[in-house]
Amino acid sequence: MQTTPDDVLIGRIANGDRLAMQVLYARHHVRVYRFVLRLVRNEATAEDLISEVFLDVWRQAGKFEGRSQVSTWLLSIARFKALSALRKRGEAELDDEVAEAIVDTADDPQATLEKKDTAAILRNALTALSAEHREIVDLVYYHEKSVEEVAEIVGIPEATVKTRMFYARKKLSEVLKAQGIERGWP
Amino acid sequence: MITKNAPEREEIEHLLPWHAAGTLSHRDAKRVEDALAADPDLARQYALVREELGETIILNEKLGAPSARAMETLFRKIDAEPVRKPAVSLNLADRLGAFLSGLAPRKLALAGGIAAIALILQAGIIAAILLNETAPGGYQTASAPSRAPIGGSFAMIRFADKAPAADITAFLDSNKLTVVGGPLAGGLYRVRIAATALPKDDVARMIKLLQQDKTVEFIATTD
Image 1 (cartoon, rainbow over the protein chains, first blue to last red):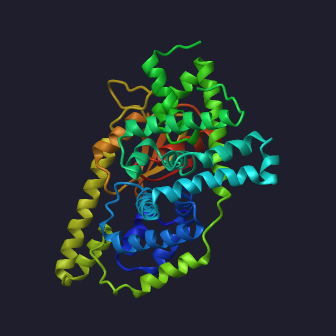
Image 2 (cartoon, rainbow over the protein chains, first blue to last red):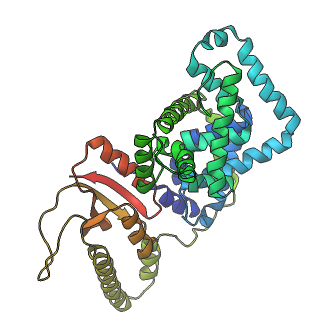
Image 3 (cartoon, each protein chain N blue to C red):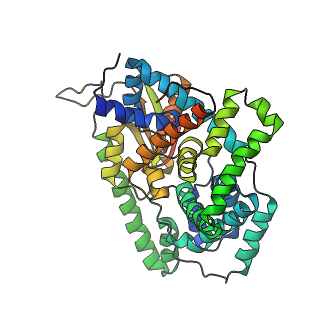
């Protein structure tokens, strides 16, 4: 079965087709939500932001030139919205949330049990990365974006994409080491 | 055993996450695979990358989905937007249809004829460009082009409307693809993606990689 390509849906949305908008939303909203949620760490904010992301798509569909995948365009808009929301909230509050997230997990008896599980510790460490590093790890591993696409979404050169991912992985190893997991790399 | 020089090894090392995610070009994926086969340290690091990939997916999947509130809010806002007049379509067929519907019958017949000739010429030019390439591993005598049946793994592909011929040629070259048939109905071409009959999983992996290219609108396996 072949589905209607995303760029065709965008063309229809540009002409005011509400049904095409519903199809596009159904196709992408979960991934966009998860991308935003990992950045802003607040479900209500993430829900508000995805409404704004798709409203932008409705308004800007006529300007989409088809040079990139629609999913890449969506994530670019989502990233811009998420970073704007984070700036409004303020960095201090964000830092508190990061610390809180780590402490919360450590205090939870269930999480303490899970800590015996290396995979759970790795997931915990992925959560503890900085927003910049979480973002690139998610784009590469979960959203399956190529080097070129990540460069477009984040707005950095391709060489920087590769080194940032490398340092995110290095940081991950450091966090794991601090929790007693020696990976043998770097 | 480390067979690569330091800068090349570092470059390969940086590509490991994309190799694990299956988002490298066919050429880069081959470079990484060759390096992994020759460098046990790199292979150990790749095992860590695969572990990170798996746990990142689990972590994201555990995040759940937004409630219906997000969609309701969106469409409430859309309904509050001013009704827009249909913009000029990005789709060439739609624009052509709108143009033709505005013509008188005689003009319409003339325009239809011109359009049909233009389409035939365009298909002929694209086919000539694409079929001009010789299949790797095949042969061609001086007296006549080879028509011997060729083996391998194949896919059906449709290129993006806006993809320039130069980009299509570069895409075919860089991925070592050979057009062996087409254009068929729906603008599809039959391409050979490997000289040998690969296992289904390998073909699926290649198709996934090729699908990422901007020149490709549709690609699927075929016998």
